Image (cartoon, rainbow, N blue to C red; front, side):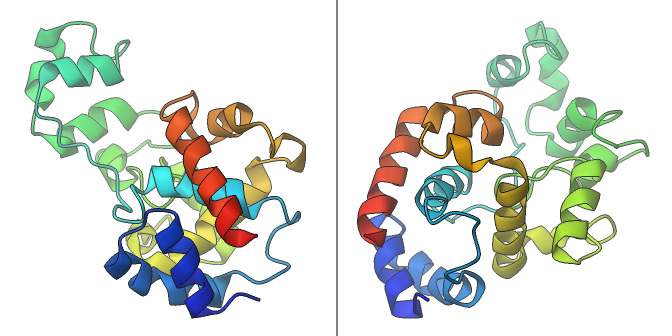
Length: 203
């Protein structure tokens, strides 16, 4: 089992800022043991993915404060086919969340899109996702979704999500893993780079 000092070394080797690594190292040490994952090959790709998802452990909540209509259209082209469609949501994160996430992923009440915006890593999104993940970690995330912005719960949830969603058979296929995590291939090269750094640090 890795110690806090071990994790401090591993995280800084993966480009995590020293101050951030100091805050997170005990969380990793207290949460991850030798039998946490179903395969010893899980840990490096897990780290590579969550470090991208959380911007090197700096962000545990989705940033929906877009500053241009162009960017909103680029991220959600089907929901915002024109700049005119997107302009009301510029610098309006709550309205954007309710527009993009409302009425799906179990979000049925007014305000659910914002209430169940992405948190943790990978970003858990939607009432259904929060309820499912809460069951995995024994927490009522449906009624306390903000728990996923706390490092301990975020890491716990990330591990359980990973174990349920990422089959061992694809661990050596970063493209397949990224598609499971993110739905596409965003930042694939960076995910591979961080996975390789994590694998070297864990060796």
